Image 1 (tube, rainbow, N blue to C red):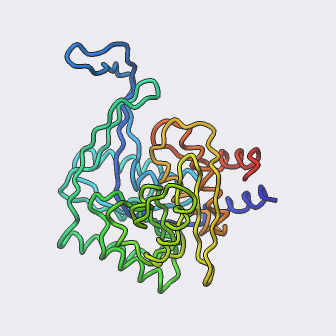
Image 2 (cartoon, one colour; image 1 turned 120 degrees about the vertical axis):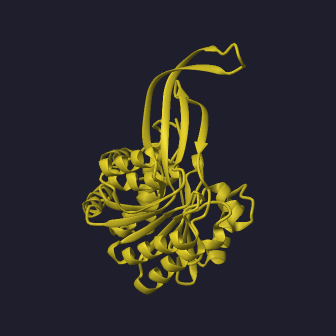
Length: 331
């Protein structure tokens, strides 16, 4: 029964169109091997064997939607230099709409990870955190406002690199309240005050603890934090991702709150990079395609279990998700 339900749901994915708004990041991976320590300092010498670029941040959210068979456009800020061009080329290559990207006189955010033997040795970042201000901000928000009616859902991927603002959320929440659109947010510590009245927020344990102002250390404090976030943000639902403990969904149902705990399905964990991107992409696409939030969260939980078994920012496919549902008793 569940497999038939999942198959029918997957058929709807291609009919849904999602706008991802947020901080667009270029992930650079340098792969190599280590066989000695540098004589100059007590650090490993990496002999580089491969270098590649991948979509990160909000772009990885969009890439996850594409991998699942949905349609997606992305909106954010990139620089006008060579790395910005690499990003745009990657997005177009994947089939992600770039009509709502705003080019500004700033550096494109690039995260470089050096990996040897499936182990990350070091990461270094090039980024510009400046908030978009003045005329540039007006143009950016106006562009988004004019686009909202064309989408089934909005995902905000907040990495606190200057894109997300109170003015932007005012536009998104007004649109949600007027038209009933689904607005999901992958939050960042320090911005929780912005996320009021959204449809769904997907913090991890640390982010939920900060947003609720409650240290989550057991099930009792977890539930207290979930209820606190629902009340504090006046949002419709909260999905707290808990790493190896799985996920917990808090959903308003009239005057009640339904709490659903989902155990992890990850068989092995190589890299948790981008797992949160996979979660919000999957639960949003599944929900607007017809799944209730609990079933959508189960699908997202399975997708997250798949991507943490891969190295680097990764995606899950319909076929991979279906295989887990065929074999895992929880699913």
